[in-house]
Image 1 (tube, rainbow, N blue to C red):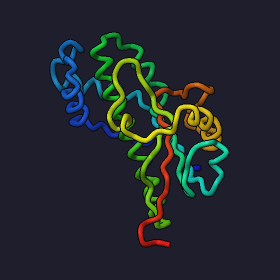
Image 2 (cartoon, one colour):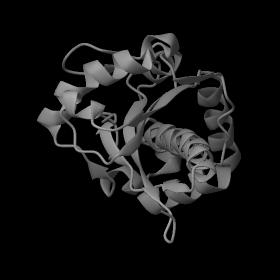
Image 3 (cartoon, rainbow, N blue to C red):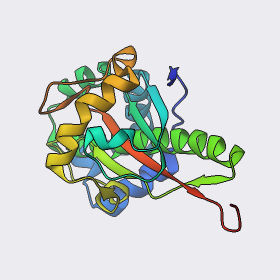
Image 4 (cartoon, rainbow, N blue to C red):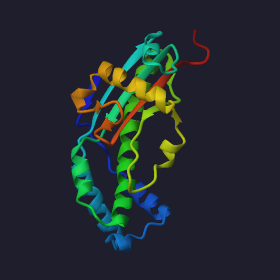
Length: 206
C-alpha cells in the first residue's frame, strides 16, 4: 500500500472558467460579476482541500473475495479532498454559487484522480504494463449540481458489487490513514473517489 498525504492539487482556473461558461450558470446571480471574483472563490475552496491518496497493486485472484471483476493485476485507489471542504460548502446558501462550487470541486477531483492514475501508470511501465480503463467503485453525487462528463462516462462497478467490495478494499488499503471510511452505505469524506485501474501487458510483451 502506498499513501500520499497533502499532495498539491493544482488550480486549473482557465478550465474551471470554461466549464462554468459552458454550464450556462448566471455568474451575476451567484455574486460573481467578474472572472476575478470566481478566481477568489476558487482559491477559498482550494484552501480547504486536504488531499490524500492510498493505492495498492492487487495480483492474482485475491480481489475475487471482494466480488468485483478484475484482471490478473489491478491497482485499487482511493483519493479524497478531505472533510474540511464540506464545511466551506455548508457556508454557501446561494444556489448559483453552489452550482459553481460543484464545478470547482469536481475539477479538483479530476486533477487528483489524474495525479494518482499517472503514478500507477509509472509503476505499470516499470513492469512492461499499462494501466488503463479505470472502473469506479464510488464517486460523490452532490445535491447542488450535475456530475461531470469524466465521471458520467467512466466505467462503473455495479452498485451492489461496489457496496459489497468497498469495505474490504478500503480496509486493505488502510484508507483510514487518509480519513476515508465506509459505513456500509456511503463513503466519507464525500469528496472521495474509489476506483480500480486494471493493468494490461504491453503489446508484443510476453
